Image (cartoon, rainbow, N blue to C red; front, top):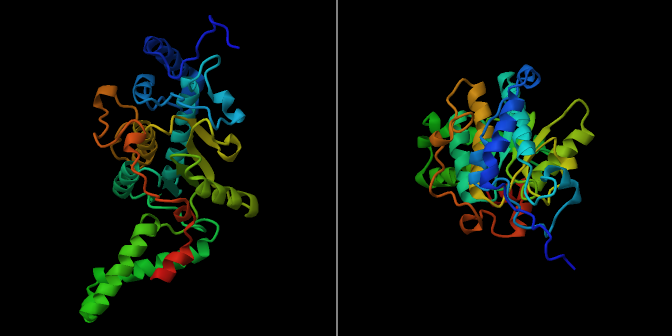
Length: 317
């Protein structure tokens, strides 16, 4: 029986504590140690709090291993953990891209987030999966590279004008094949090898991608795919190299953190960032991005679709 005077745990960082926490984190990032390591604060605590990034709505499927990421004595994610993990992930992506490495982003659960990844990913010329994860994308890369080559050959028919030599019916078939392949592998058609880093927006919803990266790490010598992921209280920290504790039920929080991680690619390429290291008033979250499940916009209609394999796509073609 709970005592009447027992303190009720908060589920989000209180507004009146934001300033105090912000200053504490700012002071840490200003130390010689952090500056020397190249870490910087990517997003403000106030902005993350405003989109519910620290909020924990339910512990129904709570993984005890996630307790280290929760504010001690409270019921929300520790802002310091979120800020520092985000900073480390940002630095890892930046250095990888700066040194010519390939990174792969994966977000297939919410349509507005997936669309944002596709648009920003195309602009940055980085690799992404935003429709659904095809089984074997990493573990059966030899097969998928053949399919990528097939797509590029078909696209070449259009770019060179060679497609005009075909009949209208044949052109229609070719265009349908291109659209089908673009839907699933359009974001990785220029990827010529396995990525150095895999970034996902939800450690549970994108578990198939994470497990494939883990399989590569365990079974292939001298090959390491660093895994970066946003994670809620039901995630498994041991599967992730850089775990960013975050309320993945909030579309606004996902959009904000994903944008920041994509900004690491932008900065490495010498381009302007969208949200990273910018004043809060300059960060504009699109109106079509909801803060909760009301605007979830599920892309995957059922569980069977999450298990789609590359062979299934090729059979349909």
